[in-house]
Length: 231
Image (cartoon, rainbow, N blue to C red):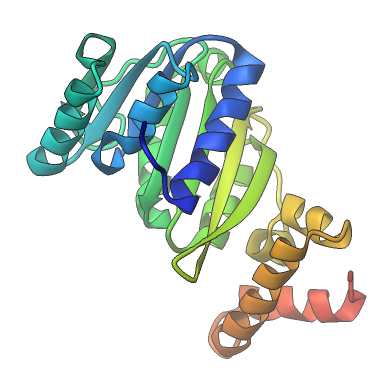
């Protein structure tokens, strides 16, 4: 049985929620983190089959070894490719894009949107965990018409991580600076009294107070947060 880190467990929980909504199916893990998430999804019946993608051969071999050792070689595929290149999505897929920078995630999603039909994109779910540039990822997702089904926060080794579960709606919209920087659903959770999210916002306040000197969007977000004093 695989022991997941707090970050991977939070991602796993969002994958499980997406699979519960869609029913049985496939999980595609982009940047597969040695195959740990994929193995856990198969061990616990969250996925019927998995595809792991890695841009480099070395990490791909680690994922192959983990899946083979767990006895899932016949229910898994590991590809050396850039993001989702060469992966044909299917109805009911859950796609995980985690553990990489926000600009990389935007690039992968942009190519995915260009390669797939809106009809198919509406039938899959995305679980996204950026390491940085989270506000840019949220802005991109809204601008492409993605719907935020959920967003959660976890701590792992004294770092905060955001995990977003998304579906595709195809109608672009704007979030505005505050929701881009703090997260629309996280704001709701903080107002409702979620202590972990409130701690995360305290952390963001400190980070953004420095960034606001050179980043107008962050400055506008801080000003709105202070002006309305939501909680």
